Image 1 (spheres, rainbow, N blue to C red):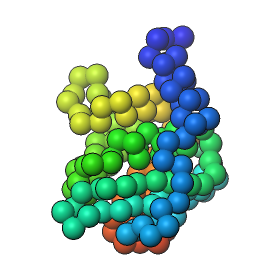
Image 2 (cartoon, rainbow, N blue to C red; image 1 turned 90 degrees about the vertical axis):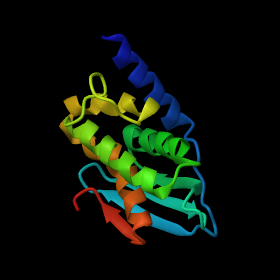
Image 3 (tube, rainbow, N blue to C red; image 1 turned 90 degrees about the horizontal axis):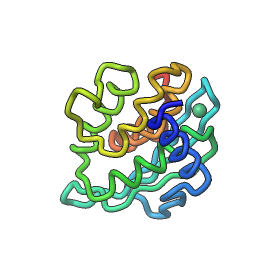
Image 4 (cartoon, rainbow, N blue to C red; image 1 turned 120 degrees about the horizontal axis):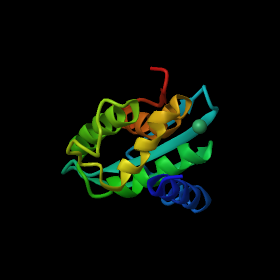
Length: 151
Ligand code: ZN
């Protein structure tokens, strides 16, 4: 097993066991329920965006597999303090990476630690688990109450 794969598994397990930002924001500006019917993952994303367009708080709650939870945990940590426009372009990069159109090993990305999820390319059934939180985020930014990985 490669070192990067070992690291991937460790980080997923850690975030699954101790998810960051795992809470409800009671007065959230936006919230969106995301659903991945292929795996049964279900998360609700909460989002506060200030008048300046900056994400001041973002959190999630729900039930799902280790990858969907770890991805939501890492995404929420990564997005705090970024603008909603940045979040939209990060979604595109993340999506392109997990489907294999963007290779962080040879192409420049702004994904930082999230490039860890490039590993899911090899497991096509997991791609939607990793991107569920992002679909819910996009739904929230577009003021939708629900989002699905099948959209
Ligand atoms: Zn899943």
